[in-house]
Amino acid sequence: MFYLIIFSAAVFFIAHVTLLFTSFKGAQLAGKRYFYSHLTLWLAGILVFILASTYSGSGRSGFLDYFDTSVKRGMILLFTAALSFVAHNIVQFAVLPLLKRK
Image (cartoon, rainbow, N blue to C red):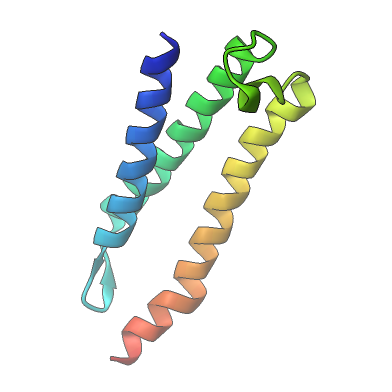
């Protein structure tokens, strides 16, 4: 189960990056694809949170052992939300205006 969750989180993150880069069509943004890119990022973050909640302190991973308190595990979700927010603002206020100029 450990490796299945790791693999799933990696697949969702790769899907996030792929969907994000392919959501730009010319000077427009493909809304559904852009939403799915955020959704896959959130799912990857939730899977990492599940990994940390399940396996922290078990000695299976030094990285996961760091998340030994609920505050540290909560930071995974906060980081995921912040990353999504920052990425959305970069696209909205930097990328789209540059695309519209062309």
